[in-house]
Length: 114
Ligand code: AMP
Ligand code: ZN
Image (cartoon, rainbow, N blue to C red; front, side, top):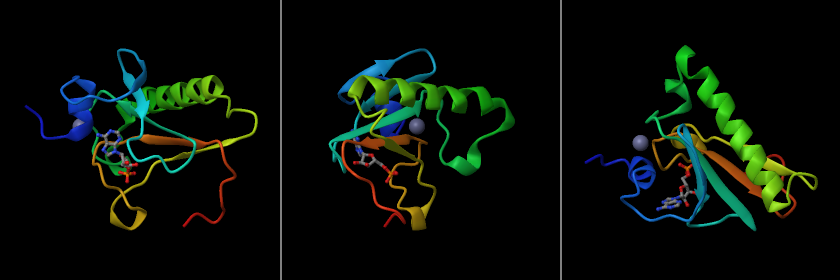
C-alpha cells in the first residue's frame, strides 16, 4: 500500500469529494479550502514535484489543465476568473508530494501571492 495521500485518494482508499475522474486524472475538493472554490486536480500517475515532470508526461500535464478548465466552467468561476497554482518544494509551501493543480476562485485573488 502506498503511503502517498493522493495516490490513496486516487485508489479510493481515502475518501474525498471527487468531482471528476478519468483514466488519467482526478479532481476533488480541497479539504481545507482557501477560496469559495478550491479544487485539486491530480494525475493518477505519482509524480512528486513539478521538477519530476518528464518529456513523456507532457500530454498528461496538458490534460490536467483541460480538466481544471472544465471544473472552472462547471463551478461558474471561468468568466469572473480563477487561479491555477502548482506549488513546488518547501518555499512554495508544498505539503503533499504528488503534483496537483490548485483551482482557486469565487473571490478576488491577490497579487503578488503571499
Ligand atoms: P500543497 O500545499 O500545494 O502541497 O497543497 C496540498 C493541499 O492538499 C492543501 O491545500 C491541503 O488542504 C490539501 N489536502 C490535504 N489533505 C487532503 C485530503 N485528505 N483531501 C483533500 N485535500 C487535502
Ligand atoms: Zn502519489
